[in-house]
Image (cartoon, rainbow, N blue to C red; front, side, top):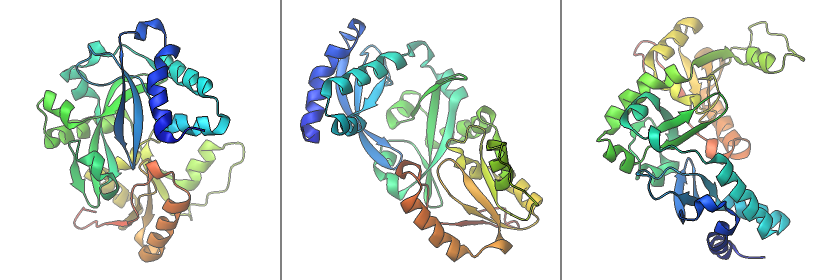
Amino acid sequence: MMRYDEFKETVVDNIRDYLPTRYKEYSIEVHKINKINEDLDALCVINTDLKIGVSPIVYINHMYEEYKKNKSLPDVLKTAAETISNTHVDITPTLDYENLRENTIFVLVNAEDNKAMLSAVPHKKFLDLAVVFRWLIQRDNEKFMGTIITNEIAGKYKLTADELFDIAKANTRRIYKPGFENVVDLVNRLFPNDPIPNDKSVPMYILSNEIAMEGASYILYDDILKDIRTQLGEDFYVIPSSINEVIIVPCSTIDAEHTKTMLRNVNRSVVARQEVLSDNVYRFDGELSII
């Protein structure tokens, strides 16, 4: 069985043989991609006519895991080529400033765990977190194509991190409606055939968006937090359960230090590494209206 570095070189040398002929003039490259909480080797099949490097990609790290399972290099290459071909979309007409301005949202990530990514992207610090910006280049009911905005992209459109923040703040909850729901109500909605009683004695809530993806960013909206404070009638803790959502709990119902220990254990044993947000528990102060 090939080691990873040998496998990576073999993929680059042979993937073109499995791609349709329309990719004959495309460049085959490997780029180190700073994903949220992890770095991956991306196999990029790039149309060199595009002014911004957004193209169908697959991750060689994931290909290698499949190779180790079945040891069939041709099968792995064939699957990767099919993925590239099936997900290819001509995005050239949409790569303009107006599309970016209408379709950029923000995403919260852990600042310490994403130092490499943050060095290459415009961002703003928030607590122990960082706000980065995702451009949803194309989206419909079935799929979306997007990319984290890099310094290169921001430079092309002469946008600062502050300007991107204002753009994203206007877009994020317009594009994906926020949701605040009691945990029991949420479970019963997701599993209606086996409902559990909810006497409202479980004061635990989920704040996310309607697609339950990268919805922790709604803690960036002061008015949303103020509304929650009004509903609960007291200050509350924000438990960053993942980049996708946060848990809201009234301060009178839990011990913050114990909850922090539990959160750290859950982050190490349950939450997928790429979805971990923070080990810290935050408190929303109603008098100051800040976390």
